[in-house]
Length: 290
Image 1 (cartoon, rainbow, N blue to C red):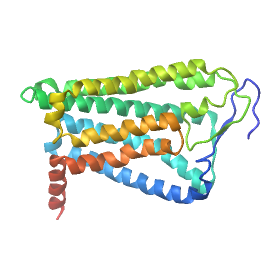
Image 2 (cartoon, rainbow, N blue to C red):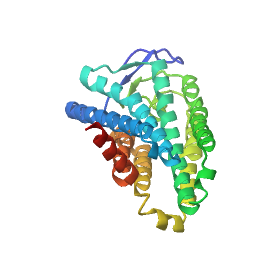
Image 3 (cartoon, rainbow, N blue to C red):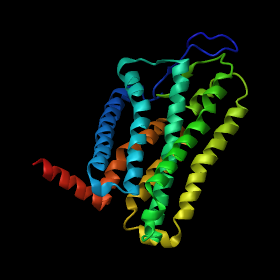
Image 4 (spheres, rainbow, N blue to C red):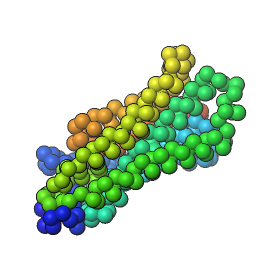
């Protein structure tokens, strides 16, 4: 434990990796590294395909490109840091750097939730109003919706670092985790964290619960019946994003790493396997290179 001054922020935190699994850190790191490389290749490939193939220049695939970009940023914000901990025992992180990482982790996860909502809206319009889809979801509407989603994620997450910075730290500065997030950091201060808890719950309601409710409303019984055969990839993406998120909220251990890794790893495969246009575009791309 590094010495800290009463009522002052510590100069740094110690990220302790995954406590209780120290003997498996090497194997865990190799698995995480493999998953990270696969995520980079798959998401970059999907973004390139979306740019290259004109048949994919439609709202659904623009939103999918946004999702891939957010997934890349999310795993890159945390995974390299975890690998440095496992491989080189570089566990110390500057206090300010910890707050910056915390902001970006929550911002990207918040934006990802919003993009899933936009994709659900796109599927709802495409299925229920197929003749008016092009006039409803114009490029201008897509751009404004993407900007609004981004701004919501930024504005709601900005207070987190400041709420943490005002707290006095006079005990341990060890975080039992591989990266800094709000839940981990606010366990360390020696003062009331009531404001932090209330604001954290409010953000969870405004983003997670709000988005899930909106997706449920959009996914009416009739829309689900029409969508099931064509939208299984999006349904699966929603499941692998929100289920680990809730699991992490209650357990907050190794699951937190999976929560940030599963969507970037599985989303490209889900959409690649379940979306005929993407499969056809991949085939066309490889045939053109022969």
